[in-house]
Image (tube, rainbow, N blue to C red):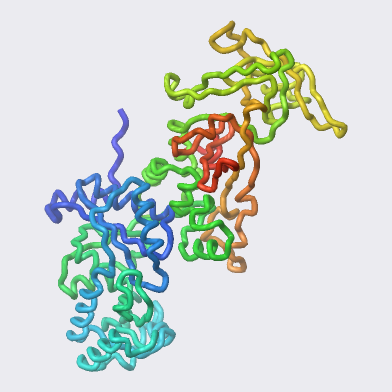
Length: 550
């Protein structure tokens, strides 16, 4: 009997809250900023927030953190929804921080009226310098002790567009000597004359993250606000605003973010790769974006399996990308259709096979379902095999084709290599072989040989374009880029190699919608750039790997 999985710390918290009656039901939220596309790190957060709500009979809101209009766009809003649906999650309500702009403004005025907020005329540079350091207290702003009446007037003039960007800010009045730097009079509002994707030009002042996130959770009555570990230092301020305003006591919990080898999870840097044309777009199959890995052929099921295996912890760690690839292979191995594709062909002629004859073999689409669907594969006198499947001076343990040696052509006959034909430069141009008609599977005497190789008929093979993808970066831990280097210095020049392949015709008719297995080679998926004249297939992952998950 399989040992029951231990609860992670978030599950323990939720179960205790439910048992104690602290909460009656669970409500989580996923709060992306619509300034880019979701990536693999977001997949972990999605699986945690939606997964915990599902496990405990709760619900999850989708709430866009849209407080920075200069970087946000409806393109990203729509893409985020598409990615969440692709992963198989459905939100309870679609909400926006901008839904609460009127309420947040009211609360800001309340803080001013209580002497807990003031308008500051200092520049951003002066404010940053005045905060001091961890070892030294900050310096109070010369505008800190303005009257309530003056602060209200100035704040309303900020709202009404009287001042330029950066000319004034609204700050909370807390403690410039507080050991937590976030409490040293944090900025609540800044002036930004920019068109907002939802509110248009109604506002020219916008609330900061710390004055938005906790209050938005509170308005929605979020019971468990779950985010990544870097927001740990923000939690005391999150609590301070909720307690000071006397509103619903949402609470924040943090887990370790996903760090993956050979991968960047910074939206800012990913955007730079797109803008500088270093990748083909947000959905480039080398990108760690969800639309990118989807285009590469990764499945939602594989990503969920990966997130389940890495678990939930409070300690940052670098996960091996090979574990993700292992999960992809595990999922595709069970579900993907099989086809034969030759990528580096050498011609093979079966000299004793009748000229002009064609046999159509019924071959299983997936060996895991021997009684399942099949595809028709044409067999003719002239075939292509992989050049690497023949060796003229073969070592003792080479079990593929060699002079005088025998192999089985997958699904069909045993052949023997009788002659090697070369051009004037000594390059092999053709292999002349003979076949044993009695070795047709299911129709003759079974004879075993150690080697089985794949092939395609030269008459029926379809030429396809292959995009062979590899890791985007050459440095395993991209958080350890040396100070004298730029992260772009570690871009892998071999991350995309375009090649040709010759495929059995049934491949082009596959409408399964998931990556297929090129037998003995790897997993590939048909790309959206494909045309009937030029079928294009993206490499998802190799067929085998030495990696074994713990």
